[in-house]
Amino acid sequence: MQTTTTTLLLASDDIRPGETIAMTHVSNAMGCTGENRSPQLRWSGAPAGTKSFALAMHDPDAPTTVGFTHWVLFDIPADRTELEQDIGKHHHPHYAKTGLNDMGKNAYGGPCPPPGDPPHRYQFTLYALDVPALEGADETLTYPRFRFLIREHVLASATLEGRFGLPG
Image 1 (cartoon, rainbow, N blue to C red):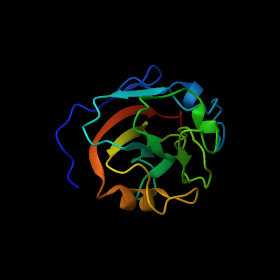
Image 2 (cartoon, one colour):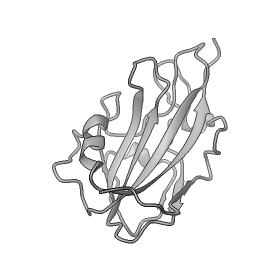
Image 3 (tube, rainbow, N blue to C red):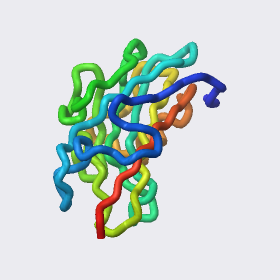
């Protein structure tokens, strides 16, 4: 399925485009001391034919050559238009399923780049899909498999990007 021109918009009360992500949403592991609360996200403008949504939070600047995935959420019902703050602590919110992040957990994992790196970009990408559920997806779903499974089903996508870095 081809992505169509649409007005799908992704916004947040917690993340401002291009600005520093607050410690509320930063990891509390790997040397970081944030609260690790997933941000509130809301969207509008889903195209006709949307049957579900999926979301990924990815750091393309991680020193891994492939980036680092912090959150994978899928099978979000088409009638939802918001994710409340801190729903990422739940393995499976009652209205969606959570795949594995690159920390090996079924949960939100906040930003935590290596100390001294320039600030990393953290991209929250919402996908409007033409299927109500991803076939073959469960709690073992990784980001590469997620991208493979959605590839034929994306009607539209929208990305919200924040930044975060640690002093050297």
